[in-house]
Amino acid sequence: MNILVLGGTQFVGLRLVKLLIEKSHRVTVLNRGLSRASLPDGVAQLIADRSQPAAVRAALSGKTFDAVIDTFAFKPEEVQPVLDGLAGAFAQYILCGSTGYYMPTDVTPIDEEQPVYDEADKIQSEQLLLNSAADGGFTATVIRPPVVYGPCNPITNRESSLFAQITHERPVVLTGTGASLLHPIHVDDLAAAFERAAGNDAAAGRIYNVAARYASSQKVLVSTIAAVMGMPLQLILTGNCPVEDRFLESRDLFPFGHDSTITYNSEKIRYGLGWQPQYSLRDGLAMTYQWWLDEGLDKVEPNFEPQDELINHATSLGAVIS
Image 1 (cartoon, one colour):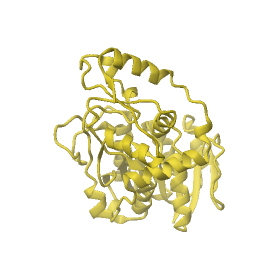
Image 2 (cartoon, one colour):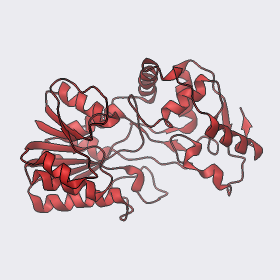
Image 3 (cartoon, helix red, strand yellow):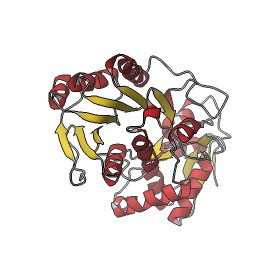
């Protein structure tokens, strides 16, 4: 297939491009041209800033693709110029959505039928695409991942933050008792979901959750990281701290966020498209830690001031290091 990837030089996009090349697809990427990432041989590159719709339309004018995979659109105004520029000269548009916009529920795992925040830009982007596909002679697919981790992650306050804290034998702060569940997905499993949907008639008009086979608690996540690193682990649990203290409910408290259990149902894509996650939590984190070492990130002097503030605040309210 001839595939256009919007993004393509960082994290999800980069891992996706490498997979598509391995699968013998023809690949073109469109991005701002700011990243120094090394694209695989044979990948064509178009330069345009998505904040400048005219530039996007000009870059895409006259181009034809079998599928478009959009890894980073957050607003409808970032999707519309792509639709305008290609003017129907493509068969399928796959958009990376997010599970982060489902409305709260006590029923888990959350499936694709759970109501979402319709006013959110990400959801409006999905609706623009699905509505345009209904009228525009192409098919649309939305893939909603939860938190994504893995090699090449540019978000430094996720797994890289935990690697650094544990390397320096610092305590890791967990919300509550550390028992709330998280449901992250390895970046290569997400890339495989995009590739599985590309050119697949069964994906037309569908929205899919994609998550790991099993959810893990905060405590299991950080314990697994410490195990693959071969390092001791110190924890601070905020369970005894006053729940009304808003400071301790900050998303910044724990790198992967959330102080309540949230899990996602991926049966629709597993049974509908035959996608299966390949990475266990341990294998995925071990692979990511090796990348972190290979990149020399363990030699970078970290700034622990935000963690120090959190630790001091938590211990002042009665949290104990264990």
